[in-house]
Length: 427
Image (cartoon, rainbow, N blue to C red; front, side, top):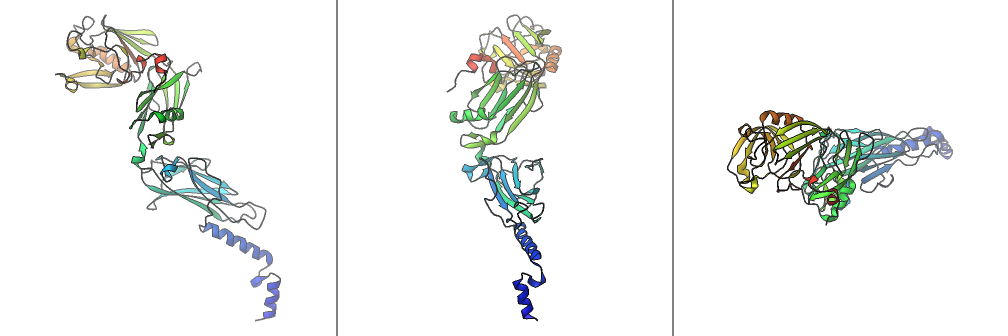
């Protein structure tokens, strides 16, 4: 071995026979390889937004100044910082941020290493195909690579672990109407929680929800929220909805505190208002007039609750809304302390307390003349089916003629309050 020759090559930068330029390429490749092998520099990525968990990594700066270093970071929406970073939603969005390169993939795995099925949006944000399991832990890995001269071409990854909040950390929440539903002109928007909502948290709930409305003439519909119970809040228009109104509701409840918990899920619905079905049932004249978009469609003889016996049989006066329909239904008075059980046809419920419009062939002789029912509006089977087929949830049935008032919480009694009462401050 010519030691002197090797020393001369070393002094000139030609190590092992390689040129100085070749040596620099080797060092760049080595630096990129370290990052690609999983070396993460926490905190190198952009700072996460409030309410997110985040982790990041970057490739070491290349010796060439022709390309910036690759940086990648991860954040997860809806993080409860007070609960050790648990994610509140079972459908969290994982958001990668990349600079100096291009995103290659976002992969989420369960604790057992199983890859979670999901989809990435155009901006790279990943969301699961199905709801994740409550109380389960997951790991997200985002990988990016540089491009262009001096970037090295080596992949850089960021890893972020998170846990979905358990059932004991969230409050269940439901919303109506349903997405795609066509409703009647009296239908409110309702959020129903599984637990009472403290007064201090209520403004946060309603403030987080957006209700966008567009009437057929292009105008917005005026409306307001009111808590009808300590766990249920409704948004009602000032007057009945214009027929044909389009409504969009977005309720990001996983971002809202409810009595020390978070809402269990985000809710959203786009629904529309159908034709105006408004019926007026007069218990004195024993007639129900059904109007469709203001025009009389049918006048139906009725027999309402009798008023000469048990006061519990008196039909309630006030605005009722259609709640549900049953082609066959057992009217079981035993559930409210009465001694009867009768199977009926074409039952359209208008109050939770058991008031229906339904077929009653046994009382046809009284219909249009006397009130003999246990509180329902008895009609013939033929009229009951016609009304059943016409009706949808949220249609209006205004009952008049009795001194027993419909209650706010008896189903959907929102319209028993005037607008002034509806918008009055609550304590």
